[in-house]
Image 1 (cartoon, rainbow, N blue to C red):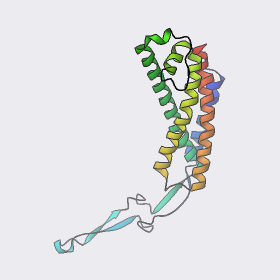
Image 2 (cartoon, helix red, strand yellow):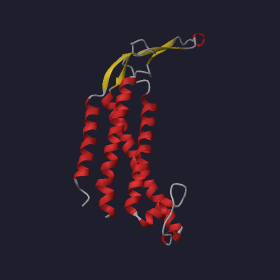
Image 3 (cartoon, rainbow, N blue to C red):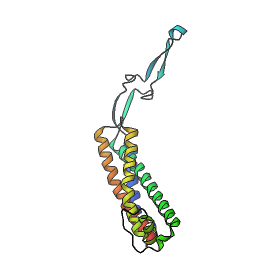
Image 4 (cartoon, rainbow, N blue to C red):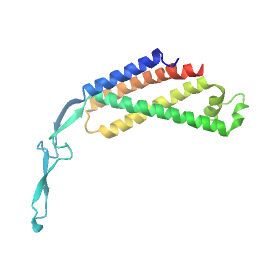
Length: 195
């Protein structure tokens, strides 16, 4: 049965992180340095052509005059969401790759034992001969890479709108979530499907 306590635990933790992140999105902020808090900036025109200039909405703050800082909860929610999607994407990519390589190299059915980690066909062989171990190893490999992708994307998109302490705590919460997500994924979906 696919619906079990592991899936419920994983979904509950994920929903809790996302709800907290969306409930507390901001943690202070600062006055926009581009417009000095006015929300508008003066664009110089061409006085020789009779155009003195005009006021335009500040693109940095969106016209508010204030730059909001992301909270630790929002950082954790963003990191968790992107990490989870990256982890699942990498896992399915590994699944497709292993299935394709096993199909293209039918000799893996005849091999009794294969060494790892230096054999490039090991995961294709494992995919055919021991699906449970393949799921375990794939989960162990793709979860950290999923987190790293999530962290890189999150940090790159929100670098100047988040305090270092909030970023650090958000990333730590994301690591904790990814450990829970990987355990729930393996025990809730992979293990039952391979037994």
